[in-house]
Length: 346
Ligand code: NAD
Ligand code: UD1
Image (cartoon, rainbow, N blue to C red; front, side, top):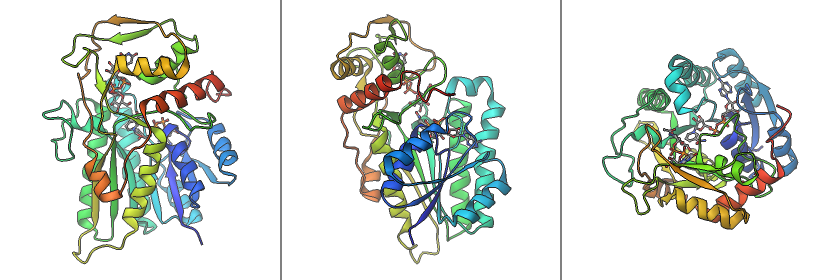
């Protein structure tokens, strides 16, 4: 019998790419999603691409009994927890909504897992837990000093996970700190479908390329970086998805005899930073589109530069990112061109 995995938020951007990889690798998958920031059409496309079916349960992760039911009917042996709200600016305006969804949602999930004796969890964290860099690249032992309610919600869940592992030697938890996920599946059938004006660089650039927006605003060209624009560690979403499968493999290795549970906190990035101008050049190359841009003042709250030290993920998961910046741009462009209005029917 194949292994069954419960995926919360599996219809979203990163979740959908991970569910596709899980199905392709032979796992049984049950998705729990309330579709507050996604469309069920993503799940139809995953089934089409994988040639396999998945179980879908429309429910909120804050609903413990729905989660218990989902764990029981799926007979899941592990959970990958993507469900959460992710807009940093919105979290500043609506902090309680973010803590409720992200922190309470995770607590309810842990409660349901405890009731069903499910001990393996992979959690979506973010590089934003580090705050302003004291040193670069960020290593996992860099102090955690988030600067937004969103970032705090992630570091709080990390703390709860650490404490849970300390209290229960059977627990095997991994928290993956994503850097900047971009790109789409190479089929062009699933990708990122932002609602409204995108905040993030790649979705905005793609919308300029397709003619939905007039030009890209470059938020600051006077940073202390090689060309003055902000530098980030962009990671292809399929590389990121595969890190979750490697995390499941690593957590499946039987617990040591130390009597302690396992808790892994890992950076998931490429280790290489690219500037806004470098991304723009790569996107122009990949798409053949001109992409007008204008230099503007810095965006409040932005950091000049950050990127990962991904060595720990290599050691513990045997995982490294392999897809290049040009592939990230080419795949984003294929998705954008084929789906100018995303999953549309929203
Ligand atoms: P997304 O919004 O595309 O996906 C999140 C999914 O969770 C959506 O399908 C949404 O409908 C669902 N969801 C949200 N709240 C829910 C709830 N209470 N109950 C059930 N379903 C719920 O986001 P994404 O980019 O795929 O991000 C996935 C995870 O990774 C999030 O936890 C996010 O904070 C984290 N993360 C994302 C990024 C990024 O840049 N995309 C970076 C670092 C970390
Ligand atoms: C943002 C989030 C971070 C999240 C990450 C996910 C904030 C403060 N941080 O980070 O928590 O994990 O997204 O991908 O919101 N840029 C432009 N013009 C644009 C958009 C962006 O010049 O229209 C520049 C930014 O100034 C930055 C770079 O592009 O230098 C990347 O920006 P963005 O994609 O928003 O990501 P982050 O700022 O790293």
